[in-house]
Length: 124
Image (cartoon, rainbow, N blue to C red; front, top):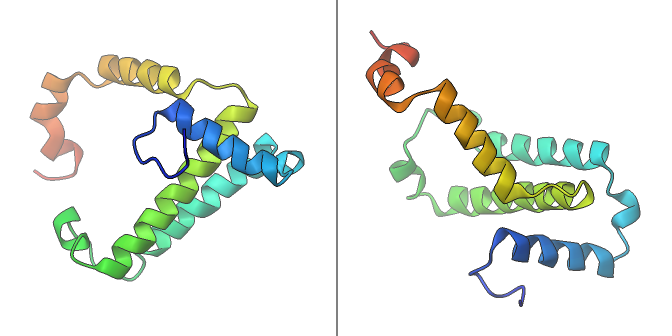
């Protein structure tokens, strides 16, 4: 799997990130605390792109090339740190996402929440 291949599975991406890290001997810096901090920092940088803007729809955001370039970069950073975090803790991302969605399906049944979505969001 080449890092230039844009059709990658989660495991492919995890391996690409791991190889990048290992070629630079960065594993010694990758501990759960520091990677969790890095994920949070990158998420904050994503949020910062929207600071001082009115709420905009996805359709509107897509019209701003500079904004979209920043969003893509920050999403990539968040994902790279998440893949690194999951690698060092041996977390199967596909499994944990499936498990979480199953729990959320029980917690938030579609029929109930579809009917209450406006109420939940504060609209009456």
